[in-house]
Length: 251
Ligand SMILES: Nc1ncnc2c1ncn2[C@@H]1O[C@H](COP(=O)(O)OP(=O)(O)OP(=O)(O)O)[C@@H](O)[C@H]1O
Ligand SMILES: [Mg+2]
Image (cartoon, helix red, strand yellow):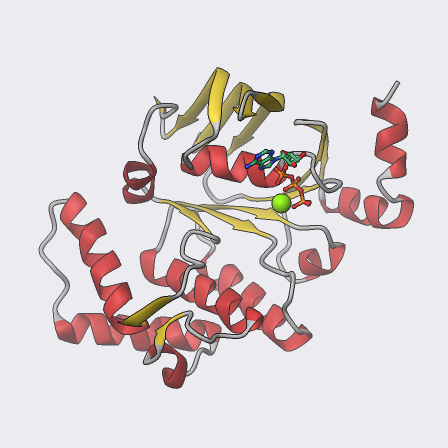
C-alpha cells in the first residue's frame, strides 16, 4: 500500500476539521475526492503534504510503510509526495528553467545522486514540455509571474511531470481551465500514470473525470469520507447533488 490513512483527526487553530478519516491508496490507482465546499478536502491534501498549521491530534498517515505524521514537508516531497498547489507563488527573476533545475537537483541530492547534466536536463524539459504542450515562452519567463490562471495550472502539471512523484495530489486542477487546457492537463496525467505511482484528484465536477478516469471515487462530508465507489458514483453525485449525501449524514 502506498498511502494508508487511519482515523485521521486534524485541527486548524484548535478547530477540528478532519474527524476520523480513513483512506488508502495503492500504486497504479487514481482516486477522485469530491464533496461540498468546506468539508475538508484541501485540509486532507495539506495534511498529507505536511503543511504547517495543520495539527494531527489523532490517527496516522502511513506512506510507503512508515508513519509520516512528524515528517517535514521537504522530506515528504523528497520521498515523492507532490501537491499541485505546492508552488503557486510567483518568483520574480527566477526562470522556470532554473527553478526546475534547482528543484530536480535538490531531489537528486536527497537520493545521493549527482546533479543532472545540462544536456540531460534540457532533454527532459523538452520531453515534459511536449506532454503538457507548454511553450518555451512560458518556461523562459519568471516562475508564474504574470501567468494566467490556466497557465499556472498547466505549469503545475509540468512541474509534476518533471519531478515524477510517486504520490501526486491535484487539488482542483480543473478550476479555471478552458476545455482545451483541461484536455491537455488530463492527457498529461494519463501519460504520467504508471504502475509505480498514484494520483489523488480533488474536484467538484464530474467533467474532469471524463478525461482522468478514476479507479475510485470518494465523497467527503464533515471531515470524513462517507461514501466510496467507482466512477459511477461521480455521475450519481452530478445527478442528485450533495443534498443526497447531506440527507444521509445529517441525521
Ligand atoms: N487556515 C484556516 N483557519 C481556519 N479555518 C480553516 C483554515 N483552513 C481551512 N479552514 C476551515 O476548514 C474547513 C475545511 O476547509 P477545506 O479548505 O479543507 O475545505 P474543502 O473541502 O477543500 O472546500 P472547497 O470545496 O471549498 O475547496 C472549512 O470550514 C474552512 O473554513
Ligand atoms: Mg478545497
